[in-house]
Length: 297
Image 1 (spheres, rainbow, N blue to C red):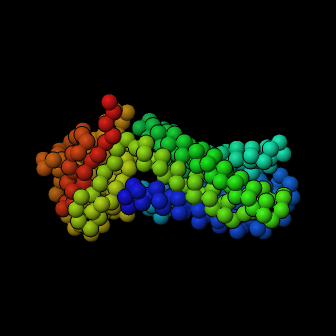
Image 2: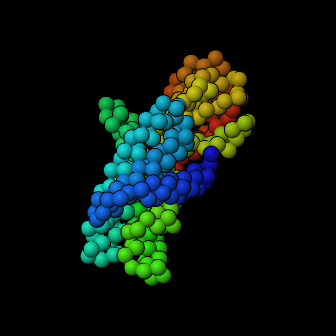
Image 3: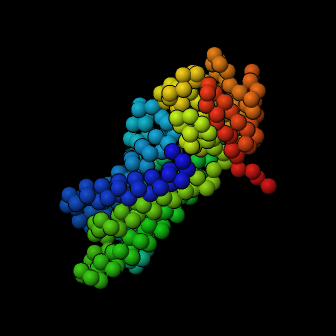
């Protein structure tokens, strides 16, 4: 999956799962603040679950970790949706446009939901915690912006809908408004990760030519085994866990993981962790992978 496709899929998944949350919210019978809070919780729950699953697929997590991240994301997203819905209902009493602040809060929580579990699991590992913290900043920025702009779209849709069909509809379960909100949050979370990236790798030949992986984790595993971040299934010369790219505060390094055929950087076989420079060519088995880094002036 390319970076462009990742951002597009984030938008599509966001819209689809927000619509699902709206549909589930049709069964809510409570009134007042609790009504809108529960509707917000359902949208946050489904939206965060969908984006967490997509994020896990993008990072090639195995089925077990994927489901764990989806569950954690859904819980955090649902919590954010509940808080955002309740606060939006309260602010709405002062002016209907303040409703978008509630969705901004929801967007922030959904951004946090993609990284919350990683932060918790990496507290004892400084490198992993740093990587998770950097990703958190990007996801919070994307979620906050997406929630705010999506909230504006939601308010606009609700306002126009109210003008046509009558008042009292601003926080009603309007499918179009919720879908627009989900698309906005998903799109900006995806764009934030792509546009604010530090480094990434791109497969240059073979079955997976064109596949890209953002190097957002402390360690990125390349190999054929299930759960490898860059899974090169189909290359018989690639070991289960062939090579690893690690990062610290200053640089990225690649090392071989004891593979039979070895790992090469710019056609030279490496015997220890080797620092990478942008445009370096890594070869594992018969597959060539380009390392690319955003240069800082």
